[in-house]
Image 1 (spheres, rainbow, N blue to C red):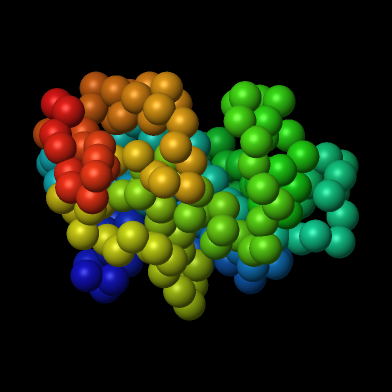
Image 2 (spheres, rainbow, N blue to C red):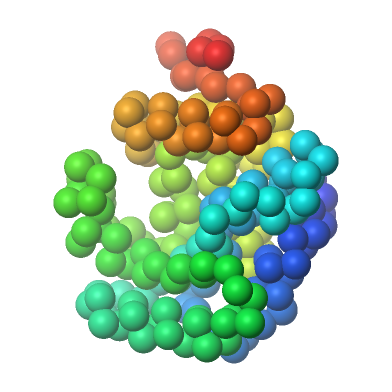
Amino acid sequence: MQEKFRSDILANDNNRAILERWDALALPDGWLVAGCLFQTVWNLQTGRAPDADIKDYDLFYFDDSDLSEEAERRVQQRVDEVLSDLSVPIEASNQARVHTWYESYFGHPYPPLQNARDGIDRFLIPATCVGINPVAIHAPHGLQPLYDGILSMNSLTPHAALFEAKAASYQSRWPWLRTMREEAGSRQALL
């Protein structure tokens, strides 16, 4: 399934270009993550263009030597220089500093992370916990839920209101996705 995933996400020319220029980005513990990956897969499954309705491309990295906003801005400037010709929004986020702003932005505490994969692991929906770089794929819940279109709440981020809003947004674009909730060890369909 990993080879299928890699092949699918590379069908999106933006994903392909980002990974081809990876070394120039120089991101410590760097990963291409989130919507640009799982939405590409869902677009292909729906017969849409691989990059349809993908609003941005997210890069996670981990650098605990400088947790300042200014350091993150410098990394973003380098990313912008390397990838400016793609004409899509690309956002670099230092996972070492997420705990410094997450609660004020989302209203929930967030523990300090140990690496960038910890940030991927905390996406609201397990099926969307995916990241890739030129040498690895990180999918802590496997890739089957992504391909099956199963949306459930992540036990690491059990924020019901945020989950419901995110799931509704995804279902408005990919109506075949199924929303599930983990209850007492078994899954029950909500929609």
